[in-house]
Length: 60
Length: 390
View 1 (cartoon, each protein chain N blue to C red):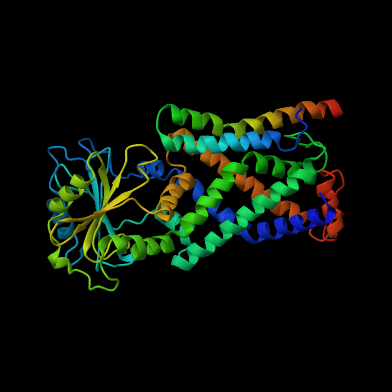
View 2 (cartoon, rainbow over the protein chains, first blue to last red; view 1 turned 45 degrees about the horizontal axis):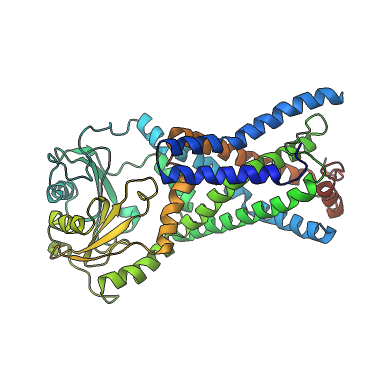
């Protein structure tokens, strides 16, 4: 796992900002880019939840 | 980070969050349905979509603007026109009237017309649930003071985000990104959720918070534009007597002058003399570009309302551009339904962050500060003592 506290949050933040601007500058593929990268915070959360269940089993 | 620094940031985070949380929760809960404003109004039996040429165009088969205005004023005898707005997808056209050129928003009447046949599509003055939610979200029904107050809550929210990020550093020092400890105490579980959702949605929350602050300043920003850049364009002295509505000239002539000055652009709306978006003597026709970005960056053409001659065309100053771009970035209505759904999901993230924040504070508000700081710097491995009430 990346040890740096802010590496992943910074990547998520930059992607989100790119997504917010992308859909503003045009339609079509730019909308798709914005949907894809703005889904990252949700996917990161889903990933964290999935990881939590496997870890809990290990600790028992 | 030094202990004293953690202490200071902890107190900033605690107080900025506590003061704004209740209002932020209200803004999230009213904002959630507002994201789907169009969809909800459509489902509640709003006007059916009209087929035909865009009312903002010069396509044949569209009635003259003067005829449309005549129809609107016939519906509201004794009133004066305030705004006429166009549509790029359908022949729908809206006319806003009021008892006087500078009538406040509460006295305005909005009507929808079909520009191909002049028919009234939606009768005036229906205030639905969405209007109520929007008003609550914008100004708590308190007008300008309400807007500025919510803007101040937005400033506290952004300060809470910044201090939250700073505290994220000592808390997560020895933890992996995405750590969710759900098998131990309930407090630790919510602390991890608070951190995870807060950090993943951070950029979005900051953008929506910051654009909310700019939107809250709409009234002073527009006033400033009207008294500065616009007054300069008109060359009129401030306080010049406004033109009487009986002397307003042809709208079609004015629109033709404006179009000639900005070829290839289509109008978004006309502001009539005497309102916030025009001078006392001019029709201000606001033109928009054709990308989602330039559609928001309006360019006003000022036409002498009496003679129909063009007075000036100038791009908006930076402050107005910032305001115009803040609107889509706050409402999330510019990238289709998937973007709206993501907006809703991230609003839910925010609600969980706010709720868990209150829960964490309530649970240990009587614990000594040193214990609460130890909880932050140990990544939750040391928990503050429970409050006596528990």
